[in-house]
Image 1 (cartoon, one colour):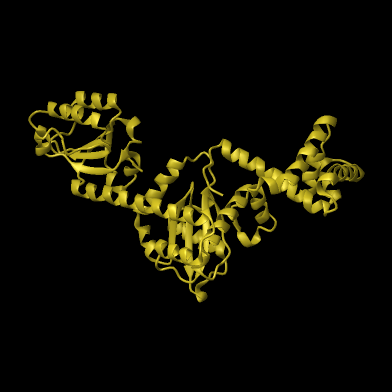
Image 2: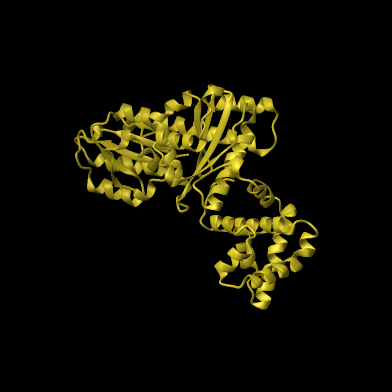
Length: 401
């Protein structure tokens, strides 16, 4: 759950100096304890795995070699790290540092900070992380299957008892596809640890979900913002989030928190469409046919005819070294304007008309008598979306739809 390197993001740990064990910074922290003389007498019996140990080394002030003995006894127990307050030692024995380095055990030296403050800070972080993981589980639970409105209402109250009647949700996801899930989590812990925790007591909440963050805002009727994109950008700045670094998807305004599940789905869909379309922000109301596109992409049987249409065009292009698929993509991009397509391809309009006619003939068995342009639009949007998803998976993007 909570890793050593995440603990170090807290302001309390700013003066921690890492002496050894950098490769162990991903060790899990489940508890924090102070090492006193009594623990040495008891052969460190009270220290278990995943514990971050703090000490002033008072017991070793006249025998520095006791530090190495302690590390040799504690390392096999799988402790998370060992931090020494520079009271009796301004430098740690080289042998102890070398052993910690060999074991991959994070070994720290710190000044000034009270150990009691460190204990409080670590326990706060553990509670915070447990809380936000629980909230993420609640959101995932809501999205699994349709729930009765009473269950949805209870869940909304658990997330934030201060919710007002009108709800807007936004899902934000980093534009940098190389950003790892762990880095997003570390960012989220910094966000939680800072003063913004007070927002949880207002009509706003935020929940980690996938590789992004759900921003939940509720309003009384007279407080509903006119410009919802501007509202969420301002809220992001309050949280020290740079809006330009994130894709933003926003739900429809809902008049009851019993629509919490729908609002979450809409924000996720809007964010996916924003990323897919290369837009910084999108509101669900403005998705048009793309709202159907996402449902289509998740249903292989339903999407089969539209994916089949692309396959037919690609096979024809490969067989005759033509460019029907590319031409049809431009035809859709230019909203059916043949002159515009011809200009972009440096072709005569009649050439474009011939290609469109040929595509109609090839796709008639797939589309039947339905509107050719609308069916072609869906096929090509689905094709581009599939390519987008393939690229996203290749980059390890963990954001949820």
